[in-house]
Length: 64
Image (tube, rainbow, N blue to C red; front, side, top):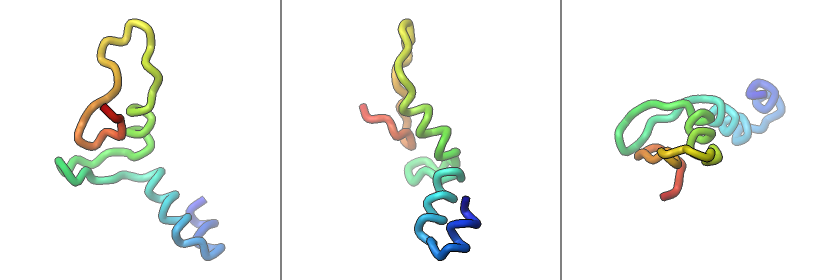
Protein backbone atom coordinates (compact mmCIF):
# COMPACT_ATOMS: atom_id res chain seq x y z
CA UNK A 1 0.00 0.00 0.00
CA UNK A 2 2.83 2.37 0.89
CA UNK A 3 4.62 1.85 -2.44
CA UNK A 4 1.38 2.39 -4.35
CA UNK A 5 0.67 5.65 -2.52
CA UNK A 6 4.22 6.89 -3.16
CA UNK A 7 4.01 5.86 -6.82
CA UNK A 8 0.75 7.78 -7.19
CA UNK A 9 2.19 10.94 -5.62
CA UNK A 10 0.19 10.60 -2.39
CA UNK A 11 2.99 11.45 0.06
CA UNK A 12 0.80 12.29 3.09
CA UNK A 13 -1.20 9.08 2.61
CA UNK A 14 2.03 7.07 2.33
CA UNK A 15 3.29 8.64 5.56
CA UNK A 16 0.01 7.80 7.30
CA UNK A 17 0.19 4.19 6.14
CA UNK A 18 3.78 3.89 7.36
CA UNK A 19 2.76 5.35 10.73
CA UNK A 20 -0.33 3.18 11.15
CA UNK A 21 1.50 -0.05 10.40
CA UNK A 22 4.75 1.02 12.02
CA UNK A 23 6.14 1.98 15.39
CA UNK A 24 6.14 5.21 17.35
CA UNK A 25 8.08 6.55 20.31
CA UNK A 26 6.20 7.83 23.32
CA UNK A 27 7.18 11.46 24.02
CA UNK A 28 6.50 10.90 27.72
CA UNK A 29 8.58 7.81 28.48
CA UNK A 30 10.49 7.19 25.20
CA UNK A 31 9.23 3.61 24.90
CA UNK A 32 8.76 2.34 21.35
CA UNK A 33 5.44 0.66 20.58
CA UNK A 34 3.47 -0.74 17.64
CA UNK A 35 0.83 1.84 16.74
CA UNK A 36 -1.84 -0.59 15.51
CA UNK A 37 -1.44 -2.91 18.52
CA UNK A 38 -1.57 0.00 20.98
CA UNK A 39 -4.72 1.38 19.35
CA UNK A 40 -6.36 -2.06 19.34
CA UNK A 41 -5.46 -2.66 22.98
CA UNK A 42 -6.68 0.75 24.10
CA UNK A 43 -9.99 0.38 22.28
CA UNK A 44 -10.88 -3.22 23.02
CA UNK A 45 -14.33 -3.89 24.43
CA UNK A 46 -14.53 -4.58 28.14
CA UNK A 47 -15.49 -8.21 28.68
CA UNK A 48 -17.71 -9.44 31.51
CA UNK A 49 -15.48 -10.33 34.46
CA UNK A 50 -12.67 -8.12 33.15
CA UNK A 51 -11.21 -6.48 36.24
CA UNK A 52 -8.49 -4.38 34.66
CA UNK A 53 -10.73 -2.32 32.34
CA UNK A 54 -9.13 -0.13 29.71
CA UNK A 55 -5.40 0.03 29.21
CA UNK A 56 -3.97 3.10 30.89
CA UNK A 57 -0.46 4.33 30.28
CA UNK A 58 1.43 7.37 29.17
CA UNK A 59 1.32 6.27 25.52
CA UNK A 60 -2.09 4.66 25.66
CA UNK A 61 -4.82 6.09 23.45
CA UNK A 62 -7.42 5.20 26.08
CA UNK A 63 -9.27 8.05 27.67
CA UNK A 64 -9.67 7.98 31.44
